[in-house]
Amino acid sequence: MRIAKFNSIANTVRTAKFKATAKFTYFSITTLAIIFYLAGVAKAETPANNNPIRATFSQLTVNSMAASPTGMSAAIPPQAQPMFGGLTRVTCRAGQAPSTCLPLGFLNTAFGIGKFTPQTAAKAAGKPALTGAETLATATPWLGKIAVKDALAGNPSLAAVLPQSAFVSGGSGGGKIVNPNLQSTPFGSVVDLKSIQLKRVPSLANTPLNNFAGIQKLTTSQIPNIGNIAFANMPSITIPAGAAAMKMDVVRTQERNVRHMVMSGSEQQPNASCQSNCDYIETHPVIGMPYLKGARIISGDSLQVRGGKGLLAWVNGGKEPTGIHFSGMKFVVRNVNAKQGTATVNLNFRSCFYAFGEHCTPYFIGFPLWQLSERRNSFPLITTDASVVRLIRLQK
Image 1 (cartoon, rainbow, N blue to C red):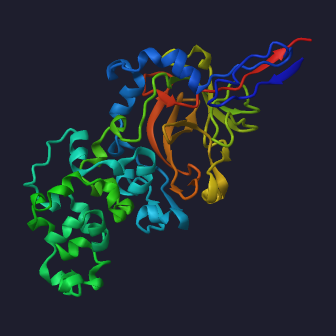
Image 2 (image 1 turned 180 degrees about the vertical axis):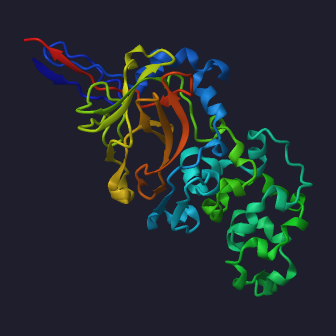
Image 3 (image 1 turned 90 degrees about the vertical axis):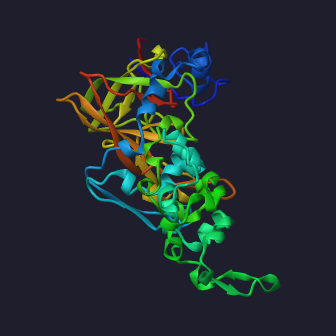
C-alpha cells in the first residue's frame, strides 16, 4: 500500500488541474477562486438572515468578545509601536474584557476601525446621528487622552477651542502659536471637554479616527460606539460570496500523525500537519462546498506554525497557533474537549506596518469569541482558507 500526499494549491485557479498521467497521486483541492465562482456567485446579495456568514458577523462585536481566562502580556515590536501612539506593550489581566485592554491599533489592523468618524460610528452602532449639541466629553472623550500635538495634527480646527493661555507669540506675521511646552500635554488637560460643544468644531464629527495618531493606543471602551459595531459593518471586513461557513461535526483528541483533510495552518505553512498529542475538530459545510466535508482544524493548543512576514516575522519566535484565516483575521480553535464535545473559537490578531512592503507580526495575540458544540447549534466557523490536503491509500 502506498500513500500519496496531495499538495495544497492556494488562491490560484490556473494550477488547480488534475494531471491525467499521475497514476498514484492526484490533487483534491478547493481554492478561494473556485469557491467564488462555483459556490458563491449566486449568493452575493443574499440577505443576512439567509447567509450564515453575514448573520454570524452581524451578531459579533468587540464588546461581545469574551475575556481571556489566562491573561496575557506581549511586547509591541519597536517598528510597530508608531501604530499604537508609542505604546510598547499590550497587557490584559485574566478575566479582563478585550474592549478594555486591547489597543485600537490591533483592532484597526483587523477591522479598519480607524476609518470610522464619530458620525459614521454612531450610525454603524445604530445610535442617533450627532447633532452638534453634544459636548466633546460625550462625542469625543478620547480627545482628552491624546496629546495636544496629535489632536491638532488630526484636525487643525481644534485650535479654535484652545484657551488663549495655550498660545504664545512667535507665529508668522506676529501671530500666535501653541506653546511648545504643551505639545505633549493631554488635550483634556488644556481644554475642558465638558464645556465645549461639538458644533464649535463641526468638522470633527466627520474626521476619521485614523487622523489622530495617539488614538491607536486607546481601547474601544474609551471611544463611543466602536465597541457596539457589528463585525459585519467594519470597514475592512469583506464577506465574499461563497466563503466557507462550517459547523463542528466531530471532536478528536490526543491523536497522532494528523495530515489527512487538514485545513488549518498559516500563510507560511498552509494545511500544516500535526505529529503527536493532536486535538482537532472535523467540520461539516453549512452552505454548499461538499468537498469540505470532514475538513480538520487542528487546535492551536496542539500546534504552533511559522507566521509573520518581513521585519516583524521574528516576533514571538516567529510562531503563531495553527488556524484558519478570514478577511485579515485568524480564527484559532482551542480548549478542545472530547468528553463534552466542545471547543472554543479564538480571534487572533497581528500588528503590521508598511514600508517598502508589508511587515507583520505572527497572529500571536488572541481572545475567545464563542464556543462550538457537537450537540447544539452555535455560530459557524468562517474561512477564506478553503483548501484541504487529502491522503489516499492506493492498492498496487
